[in-house]
Length: 486
Image (cartoon, rainbow, N blue to C red):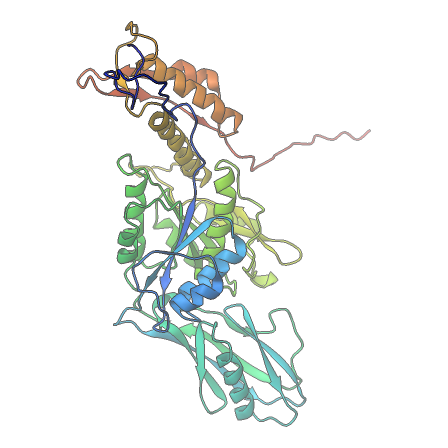
């Protein structure tokens, strides 16, 4: 008997027709991609810290992690941008030794007419009614009441005089710089009213992201949202990302973050990082908190990359991210500088819509410290990840329990035997499929340079070396017009 059966024994003597099924030629299913959000919870939530949980509903997230918590708001922002990709969350507790950031709203002059004041806390609008004759203390009290009536805001308000004190719901430095302003959309304010806004500051002590990374275990999460920019957490994250991408784990993950501040601040921070799996969006003076912008960026990118890892993300809208004031937008030249500092950029359409301009990683230099653009765009590690997965899936699906022989071996038809030339043929066929999908190009060169051989030291092992030519992205179009005047 030459055919290799899995379940039907060769010693069978009882009469009957026995047919077994084998799925080695059936192909494999598509990858079920996953996103994961890491952030802080409140004590009012029922979900324990450090335990991954799948979330599909923003209202459920509020129950799990507490209304107004960092992670609940990140989940809401993610789901608003992408409900198709599976979303998980891992909560962290505030650092006990941390300090909550504070800010203020000082009413310096009362209004001379009744009206409505629109205050924006981290980009979220709060309407405050002002009656004719209200003094500064009354107006401040109305502001406090309006803010505290929205339990989803990241701050609480207090104060009995003309100054309202804003306190972050969580401890940590991530809330420093939380934007507080009025009339983002240039809403008319009551005449005579004068208010001074002070953004939050003084927060310190972010929690350690390590327990959340440990909680991920060996589960494959394709995209991660990280709300922290302190060096200790970023280094821990980069170490984990490198490990996941490595050949012994092969569960690569791209992490998304965001960074606010001036051009110099963002450029300096970006220049200090160098990782092919970390992408950080420079939000400048956007009123949207960085942790919310990062969650939206992750969700939007995941939706596109899950469909096609090689297709650029430029022009995709970031719903929920508010643009800086027109006069505070970075110029093209300034954004170009950021792209050389490892910071991703956005543009703003005429209607105020924020759109991805170029999604890059923080990778900028090779191991020798020389400039290297090999992992510049996020599409590169994403395409490599998918390329590797397809090769692994092919081997696991078609050759799960095969014997190994040298090329040219004569064996009976139907035997579960594989040879180097068979694997080479499979790799070439798979490359052609990926070329048709638009992930790679130049099949002829790939075929010419592909090496597949049996290991000279381990007869149970096949080695191969291939040189995939990843398809590029159409990003820059340049033309030279030489006109003639006669």
